[in-house]
Image 1 (tube, rainbow, N blue to C red):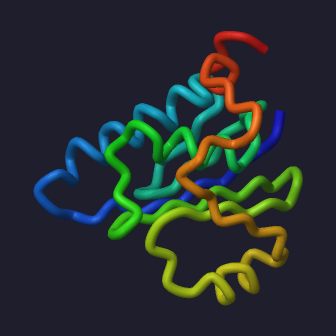
Image 2: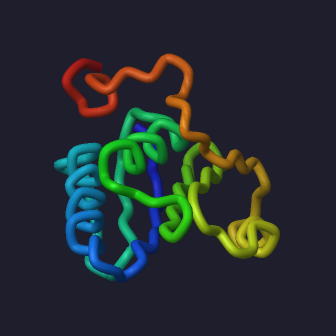
Length: 123
């Protein structure tokens, strides 16, 4: 299992509540037994998925809006940083995280995307 840090911003507007709730549900689905989120817009979890798979899944069916929302998934095991959405200063983010193995997530699913695997249905 890899360890991940995920931080995000869901812009407060008319659809904030539904987008935020769907995003949190997706996070909890990824790691129902090893999910920490005691502070706002931050969580830590363990998952067999990659950072890119996690980023894709979180944005896929949650109403995530790349024009105003943002998510950063940091794989602390493999030193990988994946972002999506309105990230203002990627260079500073990379410098502060300490590694630059960054991939900005696209709308396309990661190669070998398997939602059953991501949701822990099959291992």
